[in-house]
Image (tube, rainbow, N blue to C red; front, side, top):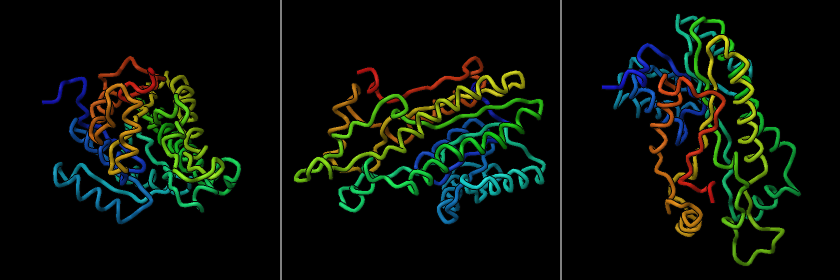
Length: 277
């Protein structure tokens, strides 16, 4: 039985980037508490796979899917219209969509990802998805929550790199000169820090209409990375390991339910203790 303050029965949550590693976990977390979920993503095949996976464990009547490109306000408005036409509404918005550029030692990738050579095209694309996309989703679905008279919850998925600089030595490759070493691109830090600013702004904007806004900043998630990388990152974490993909479910349940009814404008950092060192 779900404790009353965690119970989300009768609520509908929309999750962006729902076909990704954490998007599916966020959906499962909310389904566990009784919510209906609307999965959105730009990748049609992966979105259908995510829905199929979820309905193997939860009622199909509670899992919906819409193709949505968060970098397009027209796409967001179209999905919003479809939801309204189905006589439904969004009570919980989870802004999870992002382009997470993988750090690779391929010299062509390294050269283009380093700050000195980072292209305006890559900057615009990644910002448009990870930050502007969240802004537009809040603009559309948050406004609807505020007008509904029922309030709602906005949860922005940030990262421990919202409060930490990337530890670029994690990505060093032996034999390469310093100006060709792989790095985490600048956009990732800018986007995740920007989401915290957006969270705080929203926390006071619709507060009188009952809309709360918080952020979740996960640490590194174990997902088949090279063993050397896992060991080096684990050495930076007091708990001595990376997170399992399902270890953020309880935090999502807390932040999206009345269990966190007095939390607003907060960035919940769950990183195994890395940011305290």
